[in-house]
Length: 118
Ligand code: AMP
Image (tube, rainbow, N blue to C red):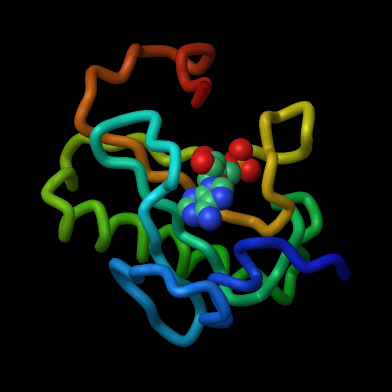
């Protein structure tokens, strides 16, 4: 399996501030924020993309959602944030290690098609 920058970050090989961490995931600030609050929830397990997760990952995927809610609360945006997962190059994914984006702090246009990150 190819390593990515997120593999290096989760293993601590590239010094990065963790806003939150536990045995399953870390949370970092996005280097190129698309909103005043833009953080990434990255599982330590290097699943390349969501569709490559399997039933063994069910608890992990649920955990990532719970962490998203907790971190959004911690960051003071618990009542107004967007959670995004890009899947595959065609879905806008650029780093092939599953991650969730929390975006908040700006007006989020309504509607599914307005959810684009870039
Ligand atoms: P995606 O397009 O969903 O694969 O998102 C990848 C995200 O990772 C982009 O929003 C990048 O700005 C962000 N990113 C890439 N490298 C780093 C890094 N070293 N530290 C923090 N965020 C990064």
